[in-house]
Length: 355
Image 1 (cartoon, rainbow, N blue to C red):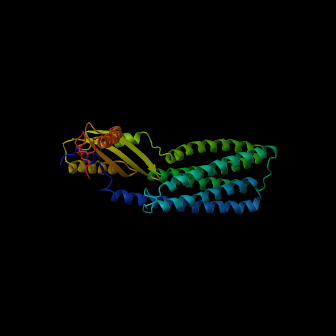
Image 2: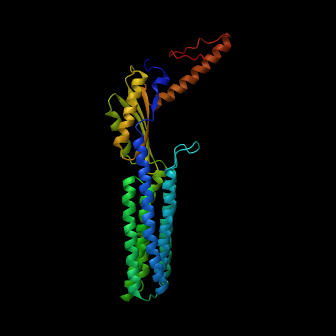
Image 3: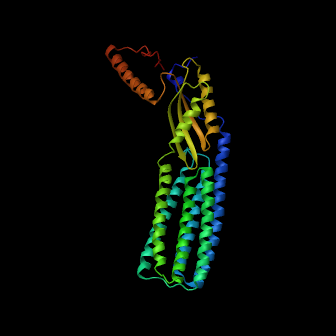
């Protein structure tokens, strides 16, 4: 049988060679969970240490920084839950799985960073008119340095793992830790300013850092919102197209769509093959394309490959085909009503409509 009928021309493949991709997804989720656990532990230890120093010195600035650190630790919990959810199998209701929970966790993290920036700016403006008096300056300075070191270590670790597994949410949480590290620096410079006889150094540095935090919010929000709106890096569809085109038997690639779902990517590809091939041969080519895509694109977990004959490939053809079929069926119904007999069941394209 040759691939001339519509059902043959639009063969699809989204299975085969996927076990490695599934294993990779599970491994990536496990690494994400491990990263959230480790960073949560480090941030809690740092925040508890700072809280003890607050009780000893009464530093309002250090108290605010400690609250930020507890808040950063808390954002690890929804991300942890999102990574755990992403390991669950798809259901009839959630048939794409639960990967989108990770992107929603990223949105919560962006809002948390924004809240931190607004709070830091508010506190800095208040302290401009009422410069703080800080006791035990050296103790506050040491606590601020430890707070910065702990947060920056967590930030580097989260962003490293996030880039390796493709998680925008984990990278955003890394930026959140970095933001809290910056607030610790504000405490440090404020303490140094008071020690040098410049009490206004604290709120001024706080305002500068607030601006830096808001810039981080903008950059982080771009990435997270892009994922939520099914955005993808522009070069990725080109990579998919290139891999499909060099696969043996593929004559053309008409459409490519790629989107993120949590830390994994999904792709849809329309390929065109020799119209004289059998359905089985077309299916084999589609499976080969599927296999090559999964092995050449790092974060890709699945691909749906549509197969059309050369000259009749692409979604535009399918849309026109559907419109023509509807018009043709209407014409046949009118003809039957006028002539009072059954249609012979064969249209202008040689396709049968008999049941």
